[in-house]
Length: 254
Picture 1: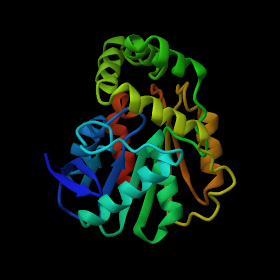
Picture 2: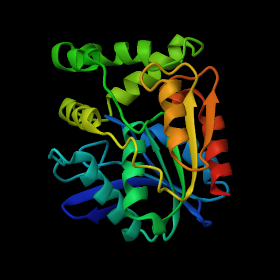
Picture 3: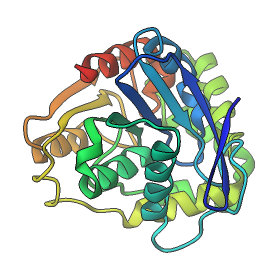
Picture 4: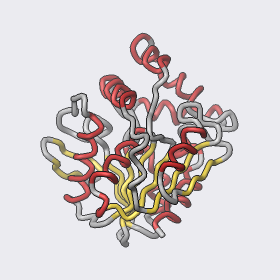
């Protein structure tokens, strides 16, 4: 798989398709670009579809970004990465924490963002204390905990357990903790009214980490944003209903 150098980081990424416009997808806390495997393949049939591993995640080499401005630094890496591989104007999508990074970049550099897709995210990202308790006291049970809370009851337990184990394995515990601390302080409520790009908000009707109410509040803040709540899907809807997510992302390209 290809890599490019962005500052001190050797950024690993996946790419499908070649036709423009391009789609760039950012993963959530503790994850990697692998969460988009099925989505990338589907979108790549029509567009250039790219997903990267953020610093300290997946296969990206170089130092983990560490600062109280963690999400801002991720935003800078994503912007530099997009420039480095020549995306031009592109659709930017992000899941959970990746959605926070996407919001920050869309506000910072709107001329480069043709459209925005925000998946299972919000204008703020409160993190349950239990999430930290599991990571700090029982890290070996994180996959079991996520399989229980991050997926719809309608999702097969086999799929939830398998997907959660794969998710947990993508990044070290230090990256998980840094990501969740950054999410806890993220808050753009009241600051998204100036976004002018086409925006699609996608969430799971059974999401217990980013509730449908948070998705509705996010969509209501962004002018003309379209909201899609998927049945039989929880927070990890990109693993539960990847084909439907890919379809909505492709529609958002316009």
